[in-house]
Length: 153
Image (cartoon, rainbow, N blue to C red; front, side, top):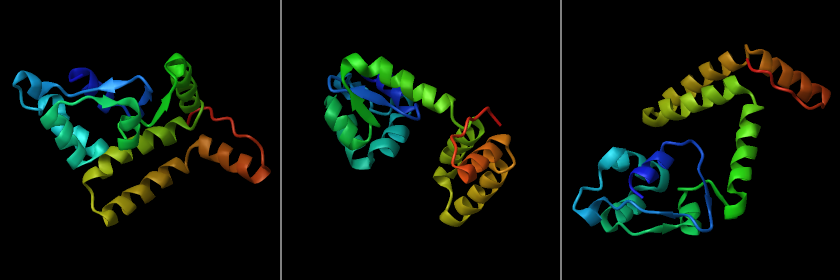
């Protein structure tokens, strides 16, 4: 609740369980629902109307609804949460790390850009990625129909 939910919101990917419960309890104790960036981050993740509802009412968001609303990227059984998170982390770590870092940077950078500026910025980002050894390995694997093994940059 509150601060814990805000910590989850700053994550790029969020896994939850069918038993997950999330709430923003600020107004329940007489505080504005604007603590720790809630009014900036929550609407970006779940939309303005849904964020307003949660921040005004302090109601609890259950796991399945949180997934439908986009708070969680996906749900798993509670007993499988650590294994799912580990698998996802391993998948990301074994991927093209420079491309992932560039994607993260662009997701944040483009938030306030107009479409034309975003397209230009993305073209520059892709040009940088195309200069990496990981891109060359991936391209060769694609052409040769083999599995790529990313090694970082």
